[in-house]
Length: 108
Image (cartoon, rainbow, N blue to C red; front, side, top):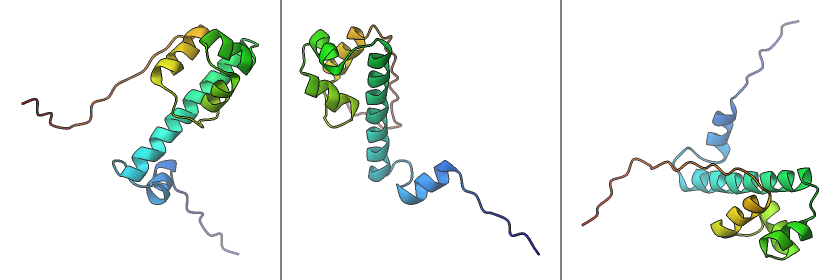
C-alpha cells in the first residue's frame, strides 16, 4: 500500500487564489474588511473585559447601543472619530501605522 503525499498550501497561496493577489482591488477590499472586523472584535473584547454592556459603552461614548453593536459586528462604516472615542472610553491604548504605497505624488 503506497502512501500518497498530501499537498499543502500556505494561507497566502489560498488567499491569492480565491481572493486575489496583493494589489488587486478584490484583495484590497478583503484586507480592508478584515481590518475593520478585527477592530470590531478588539472593541468587543475590551468592552467585555471591562464588564460593560453595549448600552453602557454607548452612553460613555455618546452614541446609541445599536451603533456599538454595528461597530462590533462590522455592519457600519463608523467614523474614525467614533472609533477613537470608543477606544478612549474603554481606556485602551491606541496604536496605528500608516504605510505609504510606492506611488508618485504630484503636488503641482
